[in-house]
Length: 190
Image: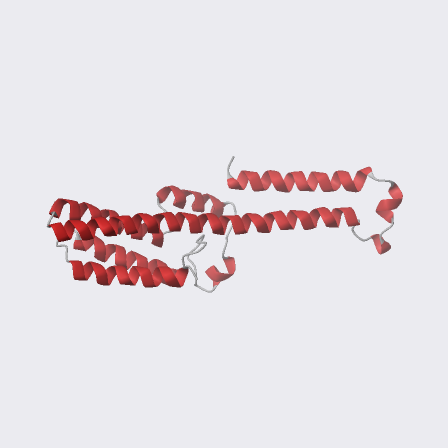
């Protein structure tokens, strides 16, 4: 079951539970609220539902941070491979490592690969905007959870520059570009 399906099921279940709780008690319990207010049981159920919805949003942010962390760890492995290959004069291994490093940095900038992008698209089509206020202010691209527009641009520029190094690897250029990645990463993970 998808995250969206799980949330829908949770919402429907909570709504049904609220209706059952509200309708199964004695009539006086429902009318005991002054001026026809919402029964306390229904308010409590709705409050629990709100907690669940907010927890799902927090879980989404944590999951995206995990995706980013995995991509960053992969990038660091490829960085070490590229450094070793360049130092050893192994052009083929250096090229492969730099291409893989560029891809990993690009995935950080786009909050994952195309499979994750497909999920983000489904969430958007379902009306879920994790950072709706940030999107409205131009801070986040539509559907992004952690990576800001500025960070995305920086990561994608570094990805492109690292990819270009694959044709003519230079340690100093690699180190300079990686420093930019680290700086952007540190700012994002505060």
